Length: 408
Image (spheres, helix red, strand yellow):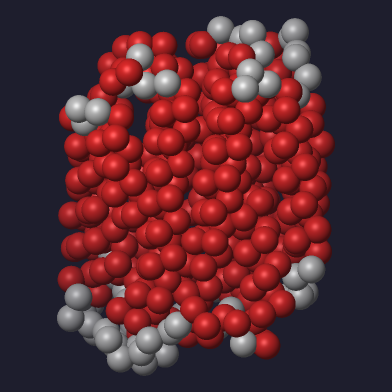
């Protein structure tokens, strides 16, 4: 891989070797996605505690509103960052996004009302929404094309590692949930500082001659005939995939609690789910690079549908429950990430940031629908069985969306 010409940014100083820049890119993008996984699971982990203690007078409806606004912020951030990253560069956008969500995360425990709590989560979400698409773009453009699927799944193991960390901390700090936000905000600011000095700009961005402010890549570029068919399938699949990811991460502990499992067991399932996600990402990227991204993604969503349907049945064996939840994490989460891997393989560098941003941003509408619909089912007292029936149907629709994609 050729070296990048010297740049003025601190992350691309003269004398830094290509290998060193690749390592720093992968590590710092992985840590950024870890922080996002931590953040987007933290609310689901503490909802049972917030409702039990009636923090700020919070009800199940309030919790649904907070979750929805959090994800609305993420959707806004994801949609805004794509064209900006293709115009201004990936590096500065990522650092600014990490700082934004870190600052507002630190303020969440200080909220004096449910409204302020929700607005702070929305503001943090705007910064958070930019992190994943930019991290995936940076990593994909740093590694060889024949490792695109593994590049995406490698970075996304950070998401589920963060989710596992949140779940473990939540089990230990159930009565002191505020600490979870303080840890995340501080870690984010430290990460941003390291990124400023060590994160290089994307080689593909520099090679294609896109100096800051020189090029604007509008969303309408993706509506051209060459991209439209793939775009429609990607947006639909991303909508379904993110609906599942955020619906499960937000409400799984509550669904399990409603099914009769005690709160510690219910929260533990969030840990098991995301542990499965880490394993699935390693497996999914390996299989997709050998068997094809489209074929693997369709198969992964199909298996997800079957496993989600099984979770609607009350299980009396803890081992059986853990096994099904683990396998659900293996297939659901890696299926969604393989959609992103398809994007990095299908689109050229000139529009790749915009394409990933649109896939993430439009998909985030699904991340709003999932927690909202599931929350409504929980409020109606039918969350356990019907929530998983809903998830299984969504996974089946995702299979159909993936089958419409052009072959790479």
